[in-house]
Image (cartoon, rainbow, N blue to C red; front, side):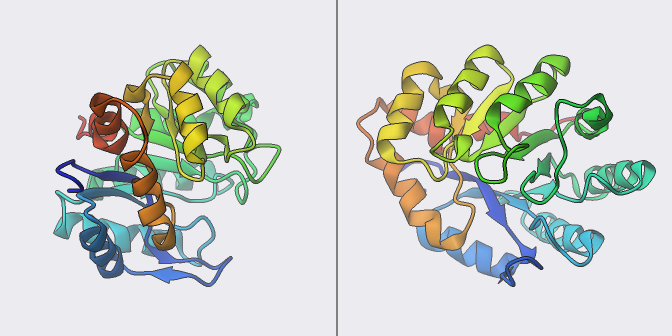
Length: 250
């Protein structure tokens, strides 16, 4: 809790990143959560790893040990053989109760406009998962507007635009959310004035916080705690939106 408010960080990572050399253990994540007053976190593998199954198992074991604090998310190359991809998503859901599927187009160059990419969103829907899409860096497929197509095609699927366009594309993320009610915005990397601009157009019950990396935690929580907004908006962004989206399903 922070200032008496429940805090749900919807963007954290555990595991070993091949592309950066960064390594974060579940214990380290939990220590950071305790230090910063975070009650619950969505835990995502890094996008480039040596063994995606191993990384999912590490997160899955942590989720089983701390079910009230951690929510698991899958992340793997969408260019694996289709049956292998589908089987792993189902395994993550069935064995560990994962509730999200991450797409990182900066490293997984999947074009969401192509019909051949629909399997990714179908797999999430079939396993009662929310899709989390990195947006911002990694163009062209990280452009927020591209996710309007799967959002409209799969109306029952929730799609979270991580980083809300990454500052430079924040307006594009706003437009995507305005036209697609099943698109939600995760606000990491935005400046406080940009969060206020988002709030002019997108209601707070479709906004959520995320830290992405440990060194960002205090900045991401602090900017919401100090915004001149209504208490209901603050509560929604800090936790209520995420509690609704990542609740246990089916």
